[in-house]
Length: 120
Image (cartoon, rainbow, N blue to C red):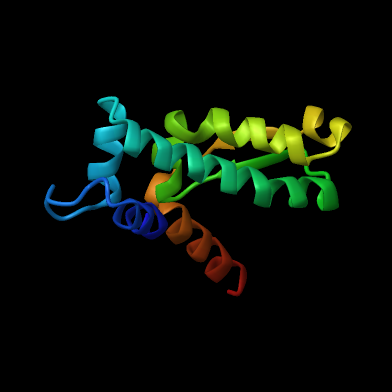
C-alpha cells in the first residue's frame, strides 16, 4: 500500500486531489483513471519480476498473495502474469498457480497466531 501511494505521489498525476491512500488510488483505477491504472500495472510488473526469480529457484506448486496488495488483484493480475511468464522458465511457469488469499489484510495476523500456537 505504501509503495502504491509513493508511486502516485511521484507521478505528479494526483496533485491537488487531496490526501492519497491506496484505497483512493484503487477507486480511481476502478473508475478508469489511466494514471491509477498504470500504477497497478507497474505493481503487477514488479511482482512478476520478483516472483519469476522465486519460481525459477523454488519451483513452487502455488504462490498465494495476501495482505493489502491482494485487494488490487483484478487491476494487477494480468501484468503480473505476463511478466512472470517472461521471467520464469516455461515448465515452472506452466505449473505454478497464482492465488489470491481470502484473508486480506488479516493474513499476517493469522500467520503470527499460527506460529505462536506452534510454540506452546
